[in-house]
Image 1 (tube, rainbow, N blue to C red):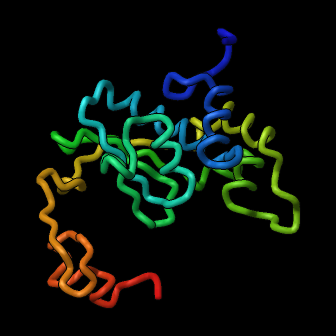
Image 2: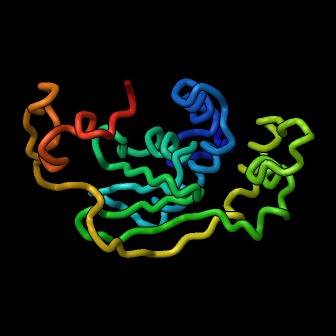
Image 3: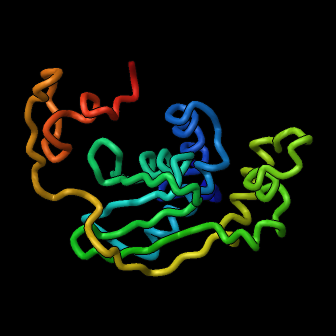
Length: 192
């Protein structure tokens, strides 16, 4: 490894880009920026044995979290909110204290490639090349993010076991807290 190569969360940028392509399907400026944001949050938090992360968007950030931390959707330590905000919070799930990191929109115009990629400005022009945007993110990404300490109002992950049962209508297992029948049989199905 090149001793001058930058790292994100202890992973060399070249390795991160390879892992990004394998996991996300393509090289993504959003994952790269997300990695810088996670790195900042973890640096501010310090050692956190009970790390959880919340992302405020469904695009790119959740994949960056899953690549760079032990927090995944499957283990419940990653919570994804569909707010459309490129922001995340890393926190200690026992103490409910953490750090929120977000993009400062007013700083974007200073960095034309990041701005064009992020804001999707100038739609008539082709998307900027990944390498060009990535270089600007690597060199300047830390200048467009901000962070502050936060305290969560409540735990976002259930800590106790969730009772399950069999739906009387379809016979499938479901979380009993959802009502007397599973959500699909109760009218919330996403399929026909």
